[in-house]
Length: 524
Image (cartoon, rainbow, N blue to C red):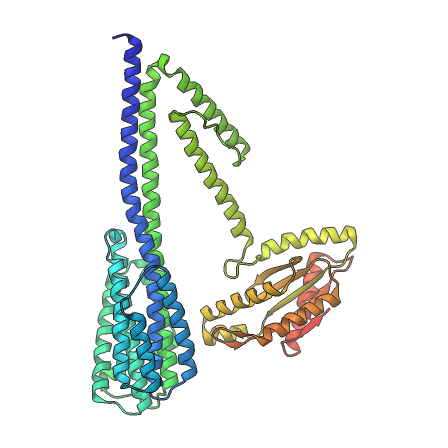
């Protein structure tokens, strides 16, 4: 056999070995990554199940109390929220047999009082158990052991929240009747015991980070009072004196909402753990792939006469990479017209460049966009405002600024909760976006405060816009709070203005609007 053939055979063997090694590594990576990606998908679905469970628990409580003549308007709103949560759950592909029909029958029975209160409560509990069983089945699926401790802790947290939800409904029913039936009191004592046991198991198995979140979130006066009332009932077997339904409902709902927040944190931690495992798996895959390539390349280099073409192609690819690296122009691409390994590597590198280019664009978007409302953030506004101010100094054209914020927003957060407050801000933002022109620059200034830059309008036009928005906002019903108003401060650009002075005048006008009684427009 000639030396040329031996070199060619050596090259073929090296290439075959490289391909086999890379293929085996890739198949191993694919198998493991699919398992981890399935975990991430399951966690998102469990999140939808958790949200649906939370809303159905609240409907159970309100319905039980409603049969004892509680607030029917609150139940109607809760049914709407429950249906929305179940619709979102259905969109994930999860289907609970008989859930929709059974729920319709329960609601009909509740409206017509065709069943006893406790029977209705128990039927709701059976529906909830179906959702919880589905949730537990998903987080017990193969591959979920990558975050075994937090997953086990999560199941106990879900169970504890369900027992607390049953307690909320049962005790609300007993308080409304103003006397304690023996059956209800025994049930409350049993639920307290079950709740304590699930919470104990949660604390044993939760990670330190989840422990810290629990300690931070599950705290406060209403939570403490809820726990005290449950302990008092378990100790005395009697209802607490002077406790009304609304007070109990508010306290217990706050405690359950806190547990639901901890559930969300728990799922997020599990998802982050899965993502970390996937990233580590990818890094290991890349390292092993590069090692295999280096070894095979060393073998091929020994066959100089057989690798001249390869070396030339490699030089061309490396030159392109260096040009891209030095210029940092991620729009450039490496020539990938050859059918050999270098061509494959070039195409793969081009795919990485595609990803890098998308990440840079995503970074720019995140840097200029408010994460809650999706509109421009203060940094983006300052940049656009500075550019507009510079043009106005040259052109002496008009420009106006509207600064406004939500009246009594702290009261909304304190009474309805920060999640409701966030929903108010998002709804308000969506409302304003629909009404303003494309030329008007809208941004979140901070907290509940927003800013609107009218690039080509004077003070009168800005006042008219502000009045229009004020009336529109005041006429709307916002989720969870009803009516909301805003105060507006308006000012116009003057030739001796700076960006700071213009904002200061608008802020002063806003202060006057607040001082004058809120829900009004002032200009300066």
